[in-house]
Image 1 (cartoon, rainbow, N blue to C red):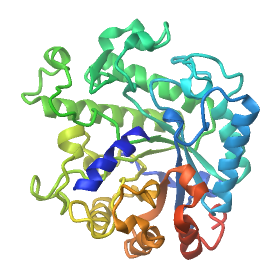
Image 2 (cartoon, helix red, strand yellow; image 1 turned 60 degrees about the vertical axis):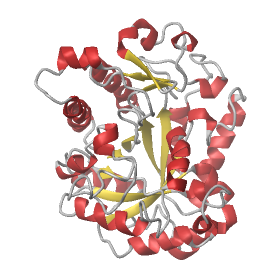
Image 3 (tube, helix red, strand yellow; image 1 turned 180 degrees about the horizontal axis):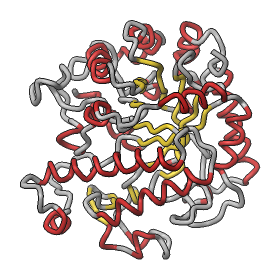
Image 4 (cartoon, rainbow, N blue to C red; image 1 turned 180 degrees about the vertical axis):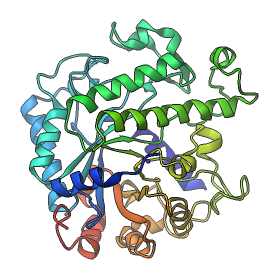
Length: 409
């Protein structure tokens, strides 16, 4: 995920309805992360070809073989869930009725690859006893700021008034009701047509702050923000509406499908809000991304949350051993499952501190999580690390924590 990569610099310097019996029974019947085994997940990223396909323009047979290899590796590592990125930049890994084919398949946005990756992934994952969570990004349109590079019939070109350029990228404006309706329709096209096990969002709501730039939503605020004296409160309200409406729509459409969100792990620092975590990070989702992640759990709008605790134990600005207990308290008594996002991508990275060059660091994370009953599993970013097993760190996790196959418990 591109945002995860950019946050390496930060780390170097520094869902409400309950999941319910139906969702748990569906997971158990498929052999996925039910209450017995817990979540053992991996993010399979397609944006910028991070994990799959290895490059755009490969033949269908090669793409399918690569995808099957990832799924087989998940089984070999005794994991039980694949979080498959199917809408990363206002595009689709399925024949969407709303948006163009993703350029990461063929190298050309809108070009039909000749097969259905989402349908294939769902079928093959389930055949292996795995859950398939469809991973969507609601608002990111492009990782560039040139609308003319989008396919001619792209919704963002048909509705340029929906789009805000910011930080060299293009985003849909969350403050427009018509945008909120459209992005839900685009995502629910997949929900309604495929036997997915969950809808999964990552950490992108309003974009991460870019120094010296302002997200230009003044006109939308003037038109739609009449009830709010503060633009930040209005922005948070916009994101709350998307989460709440999507939750209700999902329960009405397919109540067996779960709704999960994986935010940046810091809601607010304690110095900003006494209810916040004992951290000193520069980014706070409440204030900077306008995502009130803590509230979504407490209001039970989501079935699970996966804070991206992408720092090592003892990292002073954002210590793993302080964030996991904080999130455990947030989730306690809500019925919302808490999973912890793990930074497998940092292991053995020369740019990372010495802790990430210790093959036991990730395994220690899972050992630490055992002391918190609210933590019901972990998800690793990303699939290529699960396969490459840098310095044996993933194998150590499997040896220490996943001695029994994940799907069967």
